[in-house]
Image 1: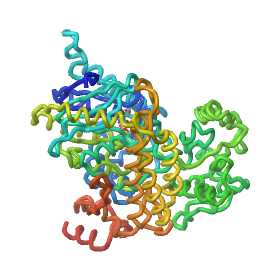
Image 2: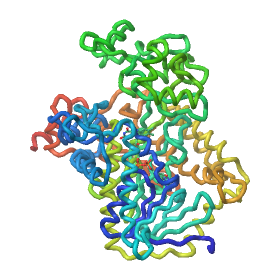
Image 3: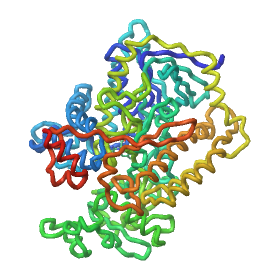
Length: 625
Ligand code: FAD
């Protein structure tokens, strides 16, 4: 225990992406002492990778936009499984959170009359995404970092600028300390030295992002191993709707080191087409009945659309993301994939080299530098990539509080806001809106709570657990991660069916003792094998929660497609699947999705509600109004 660094604060924020930084700002502004912990380097979180923008109904480009329309779009996108109150708060508060960022020093792109510019994006009725070119996330993180630095100046005169707001990066939290159902601190290690750290805090905000690394092919970077989801579960909190995972249709598939990195939808928007290994432009075989009126059924008409969209239907390569992802998946499963398990995305044979390098400069460089592929003369190999998890920690919509006293969650790690499918741009606004609320209510809780004390026994137990892989005689963590990813990719991916999900659960069960016995070799300093060994149990428990929920929900909705249960079932729309730990095992219970208020139901046509809800639900509620 001599080797453990002891710290204390009022509000501990775990994660330094947009949600964590916004929470930290709010808690510090409320007068609390704050520590922010980040697994990766400060400034390197997923938030920084976001390109498209942040959705907020400011109405700058189309004055018809307002929070009600944004709310409606979000509920439609989530197929009405969203926590309506979160979607309502999000739509109402997002504009203020964007304007506020400008008061912190952000500068968004402008309309000709000087307002914050907004762009169109899938599922949003009006241009709504506030953006900074194609690097909005970078501006968001840069601004929040700058705001944090400005809040670290209050004790500058005493030489303690950071005394009340400290950022500790390259540090991983492995345990939360809980006493009588309340949080009292966290335990972790510095990645560089391996030195342990125990932080006492009466309030904790989890803002650790997603779970993407449980899949082999993902747009997520190395640190997204579901740590916050698993920490919450082990602390006694619950996760909701873990079956809903968003797969983006086009990620890179080759070489292995870059597998999953996003290939922008603009490639298809600018004329790129998808082909299988037989050279067939296969998307024409995958136009669902409901979209037949809007999509061309032959290449000639599809091609004419690019120059004459008014007289022709759009090409099927531009169907919604889930449709394209499922089509690619089917081609590969049918043996018509590329050598590396993807399909071809070809723009080289359709546009001049000048056009491609001018319109898609970053894609050109991405493929040239990472894959040695010249996209002006060769096709790209692409395939679906795990991108985002809609499921997450169950939180109170007003306060972002989990079921555990003093434990809050915001951003991608929380659940409910996006229902079964997230609209592009709604994550950046989500993390600002609920990051602020989490910081505010965590600060309020800290004010009303005595400073906790950590005991030597609990710190020693967390240390023993963290060191366990060094004493084990099992397998190497990389092999076990590959085995876990293979199960998820093969059996819990884009298309699911009951027997495969049962197989996944059996295979995960068989993997458990191997993960429990995972082995780390070498010392504690700079040891990524040891780090991964500790992350594995988090990926494991999230994978079990996802597979169990996917087996239970025998319908298809948003990011969950069951081949053996196609179509949405209105009865299932009323159900949240809640995962908790029961004697160390993931248990699932069903919970009612909260009913929308009559005012909010009134924003939709009855004919639309009828597509999603059971008749009693909307009629009764509407009549009550
Ligand atoms: P993150 O930004 O993911 O940050 C998580 C933080 O937690 C990191 O600091 C990490 O190091 C830390 N952490 C994790 N585990 C631990 C641990 N155990 N201990 C300590 N720290 C830990 N969304 C949009 O709205 N618009 C877009 O245009 C858009 N584009 C995207 C492009 C890409 C390539 C990707 C991958 C995502 C995109 N998204 C977009 C989604 C969006 O960027 C993310 O959902 C969002 O940024 C998540 O923010 P967050 O604050 O919840 O977490």
